[in-house]
Image (cartoon, rainbow, N blue to C red):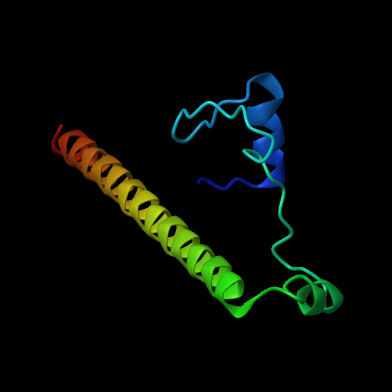
Length: 102
């Protein structure tokens, strides 16, 4: 499961139903779902109403697992971005040193 902002999702899924992150084909009806990450209090109060506690716990477990996965992916992305920027900074510093010696 991957998550995208609405703009990126519309752009990516407007051309083909393939996940741009993991390249999985999205052929099932529920493969692409739009979610409001700030639902109203009314929605929050009613969405799980009437479900058995074990179903609610399963939903919560999956939601927390998904959140953990997304958080770890974001951390890896940030680490990669930091390394790329540090490498670029090192290159620029070496160029500057060469230029000041000339």
